[in-house]
Image 1 (cartoon, helix red, strand yellow):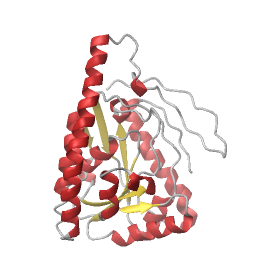
Image 2 (tube, rainbow, N blue to C red):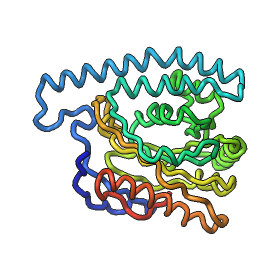
Image 3 (cartoon, one colour):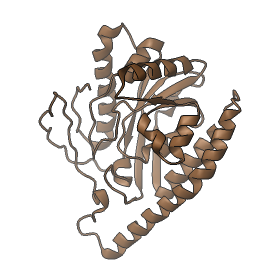
Length: 289
């Protein structure tokens, strides 16, 4: 993958937050890329419709089987096969050419707080596919529950819904997630809390870091690059493309609450360094939400 040009940092937003904007993907938001021929544009639109149709067709039966298998509460978690099928088939239909680096860091039998950056909706099926061989409980925002089928399955299965607008409820959700860990069970949380735009790494929210400190589990940063070109945040056209997923060196939590900011900074540095190796420099060394 050819590294994109390095962007200049934007000024900090209100409240002290800032993000660094990268080069926007060609054709982002459904707009044609410069010089794109009408025939090629028509093919992209047709491909996008077919991917959406496939996702709409495969999701309902997968949800029914997934919830039914989950209700059996079997230790082997056979519903993980559905995660693999659902996520893998959507990623394949989208034309994702996947390269995974550092998978060996997912040591068998070990538990982690897994923290990927988040740029596209396609991250979700892709990561379900990659992590399907592990017992992983996802932490998702409460808005997910209103999504047809996928959200219902998320709420009815052994994942955790967090209300970011209610601090007490959010703390309870984090403690619920903490109680699920151990014996090879990991927790997956997007530390940015939402999708970024283009090649941006947003400030990292603290919930997942509190979870790591409370459980003592190592944090496994995961750098995801390329999904912003397959399906941009504000776009609806799906373009086949290469996606790199890099499992970084785990970060062991140390100290108490006073070490929280250092832990956030270290995870951000590892995510930024991995993305920089793939894309070129784009990311600030520090940002905390």
